[in-house]
Length: 195
Ligand code: GRF
Image (cartoon, rainbow, N blue to C red; front, side, top):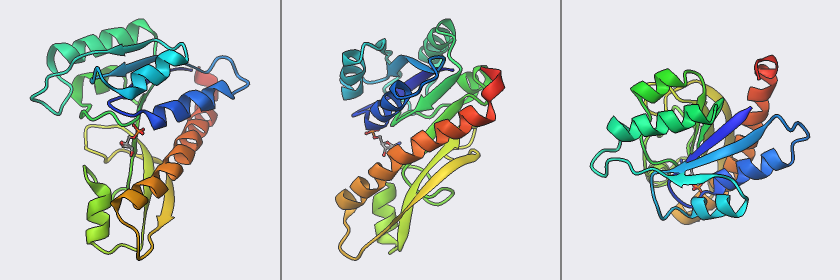
């Protein structure tokens, strides 16, 4: 299974996936490509230190959706590398239409809420404003909806009275890393004979 990871920032989920792959005994599972829409993404530096091909491909700064020529470039590079699974890990672009068609049932994403609740941005802020007692994270298949694809796995986090956005983000993040590993394990089990 040849994995590509798309990142826009820090890349802690990306690193978590790379570390998980490194610990697999099956050498057919590998991370062969990191792409970022942000030339300053720390994730690019982290990946290069691990000797993984990590490239910046600019996307339209006026659009949140990956589209036009940059989408074509993303697709052609992902195809050239024979990517089987694309992991979105803090990739701040909406992935729709063309790339979805080219990589049907091959794109997954992590979202910092218990989907279907709190789709979109600023999840922790909205969760706190609504005085929720729990939140969490979700790894899901990407489809044409935003954060609405089939759920692979979820992890819950209890919210305490004194939690703020920062403390909540930290708690959720530690569960994100567990969730991403669990999701990959599930996918590998389900698709064992296809790779
Ligand atoms: C994570 O909270 C993830 O759920 C969201 O973006 C954040 C990325 O963090 N989609 P990192 O770059 O993986 O550290």
